[in-house]
Amino acid sequence: MRFVARLYSIWLNRYVDLPASASADFRGRHVPIKGTCNGTSFRGTLVPRGGGHFRLGLNAAVRKAAGGVDSGDEVVITLSRTTPHPVGTVPPDLVAALAARRGARLAFEAWAPGKRRHILLWLNAAKHPETRAKRVVIILERLGFEPSIRSLKLS
Image (cartoon, rainbow, N blue to C red; front, side):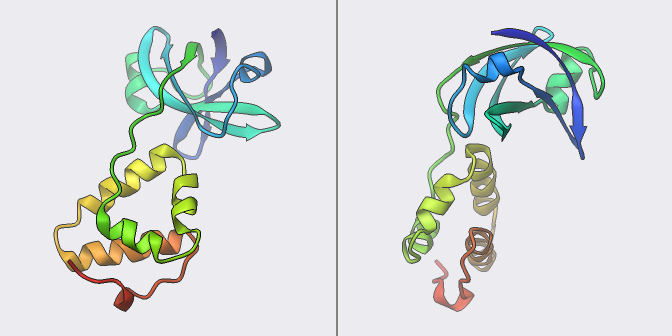
């Protein structure tokens, strides 16, 4: 699939909207894709923008390699569906915390793959058990649960 689109900004992020004809070819909530922007290869995820349409975020590295394009510029995009991006293994302490709360694991799995990957990197970057336990609490809170840090064992 190939199309021309204009880049636009939502706060610090840059996006292109897929044309209706292109959106019709993709189904799902977060669709893993590979593609090119002005000939520069990338991997990404299509996200819904409403009404059965999708948008695609283009990071700074891709935009720079694609000729330094930014908001307002037109770009040539090619896309194809690919295998899901690897998220990583959920560590045992987070698995236990999610299992202890009904629906928490499903809520975690409902997050976009990129968000889950980012959260796991952040959790695994903690150097001290106390910091890690606090981060597990924050993850549960972001999922809509009200954990108590005292209920989580420090490993």
